[in-house]
Image 1 (cartoon, helix red, strand yellow):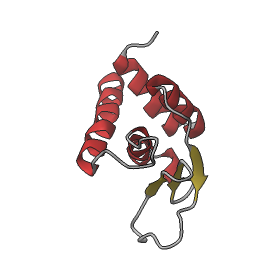
Image 2 (cartoon, rainbow, N blue to C red; image 1 turned 180 degrees about the vertical axis):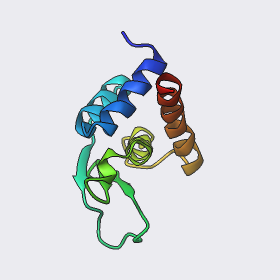
Image 3 (cartoon, one colour; image 1 turned 180 degrees about the horizontal axis):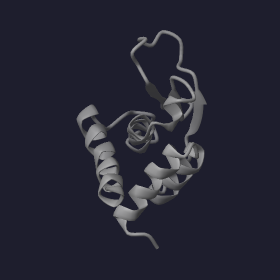
Image 4 (cartoon, rainbow, N blue to C red; image 1 turned 30 degrees about the horizontal axis):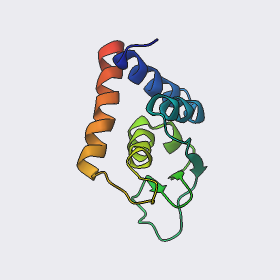
Length: 114
């Protein structure tokens, strides 16, 4: 079994390598939640500067484009929103907490790759 730091490093590396769906599967397994869908392309009506979005109704992480799907900071951030959505589809997390969650993964990867 991987240490928490090694797990986080692995997830980031999978995303960087373009294996985003595998990374999401492993995140869902690790945190014992359903696996969200991954969609390339954002829902209509989102601001142009938006890189990612999580829709709790259909449990889908949407990213701007294929390049963005290889961006750990976007994918992990949106996964956090999936993780923090309860069974009534109410979001319980905050943007600050999503950024902290994401930073913990990026920091682990950096420690193991510098």
